[in-house]
Length: 116
Length: 113
Figure (cartoon, each protein chain N blue to C red):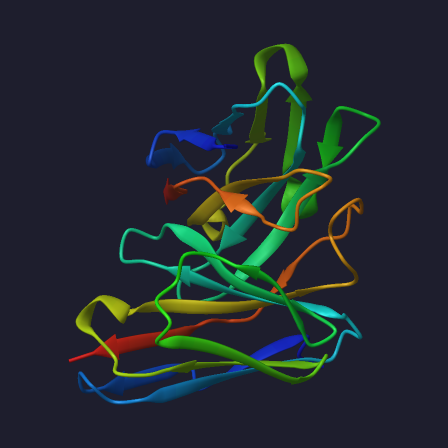
């Protein structure tokens, strides 16, 4: 009965590699997000998709590319990984477009990425 | 730009004592306000939120928060701390015309036996 799930939970890889993190939600939400939590636990939004349409794209290196095959999935692909990409990445989802609504975001368990 | 300030990066309380976590926002327009909790090695879980209406909001696990517009604050309290309350707590804001949830830096709560 997991609401927002992410795979893998842990990811250890070498610099320069390309990796993907997958996110799936079974809440029937149509908006999904990716957040990055750094080593000081600061959380910052990276991307958001609504019904497969990109609606938020913060200042993120273009090595990061989100992909939404359908509204229940939002994957994050990272090219040419760097040491500074080490962080915990959280996926989240909400019921509908947040603008003008009071709906809450629900978070996944996180993916801890370590770049060596 | 909106910002959220959580006063105190670490709070240590004794079991049974009051927990008080402070959150202030900086804007002239009151945002929607949220408190999330993150237990070790887990994702974020919503404790409570304020959107409109009653300014005292009750959440899960005995937590509550009061929105004070005059003080631009949304402090989180729990009358009696339990060992299971040890976690990271995040205050967050969102404006009604925005998609983004902006988080404070977080407060780590430790509970002493």
